[in-house]
Length: 142
Image (cartoon, rainbow, N blue to C red; front, side):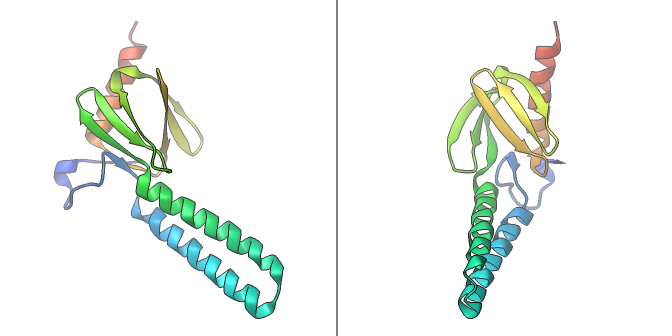
């Protein structure tokens, strides 16, 4: 996870949490590989290469959707807006955060009425990280 200070950024960040541009380019690379598999399929007449088209194409589209959609934006002091990789947006309150589960390659914020998935490669604003930390610390305090 990369923490950034919005005031120190040269350009306005897309959101308070977003995935890096690397993921977008990786998705484009996978889609280009899918096209290469498709061309190779027709040239060689080896129809099993269609599996490569489907796998690379599907993963490329999924990577691009994750990069484009999966974000968190702070709305106000106690509210944030989470958008999934498929574009579904839900508004949550920081006060509803129950815990932060750390997985091998990601984290999951457990809230009173849902879950928020956070990849380990995200860029997160210092403000959002602090608000999540404060919400978790309030729950830990007896």
